[in-house]
Each structure stands twice: as structure tokens, then as C-alpha cells.
Length: 93
Image 1 (tube, rainbow, N blue to C red):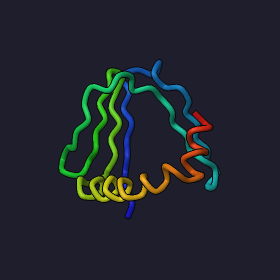
Image 2 (cartoon, one colour; image 1 turned 45 degrees about the horizontal axis):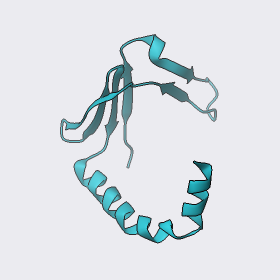
Image 3 (cartoon, rainbow, N blue to C red; image 1 turned 120 degrees about the vertical axis):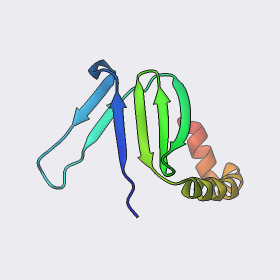
């Protein structure tokens, strides 16, 4: 299943990096700064919207999909806390 996303910033000054290529296999990168998070909401039933002081990030994902991922993470995370992955993540912080 494919999910769309869009990033809308109020000014190009909040764009940190953007790179595009005409090559079929090259990466596309868009980095910016949404600033302080003002609101997190679901709009139009299946778009997760992060509204920040500098702009808006929209991702096409349903409430049900978010719920499934969060539920799955809550089951897996306790198992990882005592394991090697948790130690690795802590070391990187």
C-alpha cells in the first residue's frame, strides 16, 4: 500500500536541504524545520497532519494504521529494552 506525503513550509528559509536528480535510481531528499509543534491532527479521515510554527507536514495514513503500528510497538518495545538493541540505542544518545 502506498502512502503520499507533502511538506509545506511558510518560507524557504526553513528549508535545510533539498536535492533532486533526473537519474531514476538516485535519492530524493527534502529536509526542513517545522519549528515548534502546534497541532497534531487527522484531516480528511486519512491524513496525519503535523502543524508547526514554520509549516505543515501531511502524511497519508489512516487512524487504524496508526493504531496498529502503535499497538505493535507497545508489544515489542518491552522485549527490546533489556536486549542488545536497547543498549545500542542508549549508546548512540
